[in-house]
Structure formats: structure tokens, C-alpha cells
Length: 559
Image 1 (cartoon, rainbow, N blue to C red):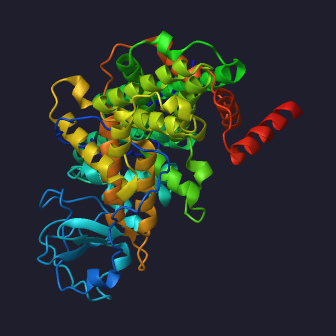
Image 2 (cartoon, one colour; image 1 turned 180 degrees about the vertical axis):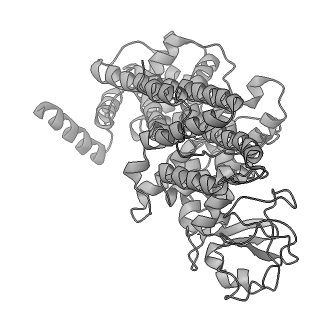
Image 3 (cartoon, rainbow, N blue to C red; image 1 turned 120 degrees about the vertical axis):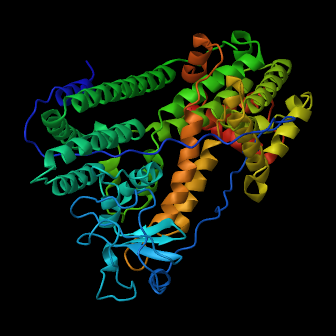
């Protein structure tokens, strides 16, 4: 049995005990996909040189601006008016200004509470406040943000907030530590004694279970950490002691989590097997055009590969990629990193580009090379029509690699008008403005589609990652007053939520296992091997090429 089965089974079988309550968080369901209009014509990305431009990012907020307005403290937008929270969670009454703050621990939670002027530093500790502008949360201390996600018997946090906070909080606190703090707050809040305590506890437990269910659904990879699972076992024990129905719900969500983690483990083992197979084999003489004569079918099989690989990328992996580049973050990249699905997907893009170039260069006859080049151009066009922009860009990249682009005699015979259209549509100039317009059209088409085939959107992934990277770099994580810049994390969550909607689409095309295996496992030539093969297809015709060819042959003979 898989490793995670043992951990989850142990959690599910935890008996009733007095263990500490541990609670998990729930991310918001991805918003409905944007409606998308039909795409006309052919298009593709020119990948020669990807030069990302920093996207528009929110301006960093100045803390003095937040607190200099005379206003009352604003309530949490999703909190029912007049509800009373648990000890330690404070919720103010709605104020009248554009900018307000919600006080942190130690203040009463509920309506009819007089709030001091926020300009009076003696009246309120702004270090533990949540700051709002026009009803939107813009900043807060880590402690206040953690409190904001903790449910009570009458309050449950907004799902959009949960997703944004769970996504980005790992930059400041490790998931198991966050879970531990949430659980401690739950224990503090639900220290229910006296009249009505048991009834209130029965109202609280379902909300705790909901939080756990939403966290496991949206960030299941957090639960590969044994330290997180220890909290899960404590939650299970607490729930079992209070509510038999809730215990059954916890058992069901743990079974779903087990299925997710087991599938992930199998997927990762499969990727490792593909890499081993590709390294061991010699270059095959099987032609992709013979194995799959239809460019349309090949585009469909590429889409199968793309959607499967996308589906295993956890939203938190984007944030972990930032941590890798930021050694001064509060959390350790090595400690938080539990998967490599994002890196594997980027490697797939590179492999597909080299695969395209290999398929061209392994043919000695010009006529065959022309046929293969035109086949890949048609495949790229079909990828565009499907909405598979990642495979489209990888194909364009492969055909633009130097060993292929230098084959002048081959290209002179290629009907390249379609290729020129694709390159124009995906021109990297103006920060890929043509591609971005095309992507918006694809999103509109997807949202309004009744046919599953019209719902597919596979973005150019490297550009998506660069956009998120520059969004992260363009704004600081913290404001000068020490508050976490939550405006930044709203924008990050918005873009990642779009990605979640794309990766959840099921591929509607018939699957050809043999073609998919060939695409993923057949050996490809290295950069030097491609250059050498290219010179053997068409001899060097200038001095730099002659020197390069001579150098490559010397290296080969020296091996």
C-alpha cells in the first residue's frame, strides 16, 4: 500500500480522546470560467526569445494612509451582523469611512460596541488590526489574518479569503505551524463552560470540519507532511468525541484525500519511469507521422498530456517557486517543498521542443524533412484551435531552434504561410499582447461553452509563471508598518484561481496510449547532437558554421 494510506488510515481510525483540536482551512472554489468568444483564424506563439515584461501590480500601500482617516472600525464583510464570536476573535461594527481597521485580540466581538478613534494609538494596537479600504481587506498582521480564518459556532470565513490566505501564508509560516496556531485559537475560542456550552460546541464542530474539508480539497499536498497529519489525527479525535455525524464526514474527506495523494504518488512514479526509459533507449527510427498520420489527432493527444500534467500542479507550487528565489523569507523552501509538478511541467515543454527538432533532423532526405515540418505546423494550428497554447508554443520553439531554422533548403520547400500567421499571433513583442488577447478570447469561449471541447484552455505556462513571478517581485510582501500586504495576495490568488479552473477541465478526446507514450518517452537529441545532425542534413555554408561543425566532430571523436 502507498505510504500516505498508512498515515490517513491512522487518522481516520483515531478513537475518541481528549486530544487538542486542530483545524484546517478551506480555499474558495475557483470562480466560474470567463465566457469566451469563438477564435477565428490561425495563431501561435513565437517563442524564439521570451522577454517577459513586468505586469501591472498593485502599488505598495503606505500605512499612514490607512490610519489617518477618522472612521469607525469595519466589520468582517462575510460575518453575520450581530453574531458573537469566540474568545480572542474581535469583529468591529461597520464604520463610515473608506479606510478602517478591525481590532485584533482582546476586544469584544459583535454589534453595539463602541470603537475608539483609530487615530488614537493609545486606544488600539494597530499592529493587531485588519485594515480595509472600500470594504476590501488590504493589510493586517499575521496574527490578525490567522484569527480571521478561524471559524466559530456562528462565523465562517469567506472562501475567497481562505484561498488567498492559505495560498500565500506559507511565505510567512509553514503549513503545519499555521494549522497548529489555528487549532490553538480553536481551543481558546471553544473553551466552553457554563450554560449552553455543549450546544455551542455542536454548532462549532461542523464549521471546523468544513474548514478541514476545504483545505484538503484545494491544498491536498500540504498533507504529505507528517507534522500536518499529526494535527489531523488530533482533529479526528476531537470530532469523534463530540459528534458522530461529523466523525463520518471527516472519515469521508480523509478517504478523498487518500485517493488524491495516492494518484499523485503514482503519477510521480510514472514520470520517473518515463525519464528512465527515455535515457536508456537509442534514437528510434519510428516517424511520428507514421505512428499518428493525422495532425489533428496528434494535437488532441498533446492536449491529453498537457491537461494531465496541469491537473497535478498544486496552486501552492507557484508560491513555493517564489520562495526558492527569496532566501530571506520566514519559511524555508526546502522545508515547504513536497512536490515537483511545476518543474516537471516546464521540463515537458522543453522536451516537446526538442522532440519536434529531433523528428525533423533525424531524416536525411530533404523531402521527408519538408513533410515533417509541415506536419508540425499543421499540428500547431490544431493546438491553437483547441486552445492548447502551451503545446503550440513548444512546437513553435522547436521549429525556431537554430538546428532547424538554419535548414534553408528545407524551408524553401515548406508551405510556411500558416507558420507565419502563428508566429505573428504569438509575437512576444509588447509583452505578448497578441497572445494575451487570444487567451482572453479562449477564456470567453470556454465559459460559454456547452461542448466540452470548447472549454479547453491550456495557457502558455512559462509566461504564466513569469507573470506571477513579476507580480511577486513588483510588490513587497510586507508594508513598512510590518503588516502583510494582502492587496498583493488578492491579485496573486485571482490569477492562480484562473489556473485552477483551467486545470480542472477533463480532456474530451479519445486517448491513444501508444501515441502518448511515444510523445513522452521516446529519446530526443541533445543540443549538440541536434546541431551535428543538422549539419549532416545540410552542410555548413559559412565560416562560423564550419567552425562549429568542426568543433562538434572533434568532441564526438574524443568521447
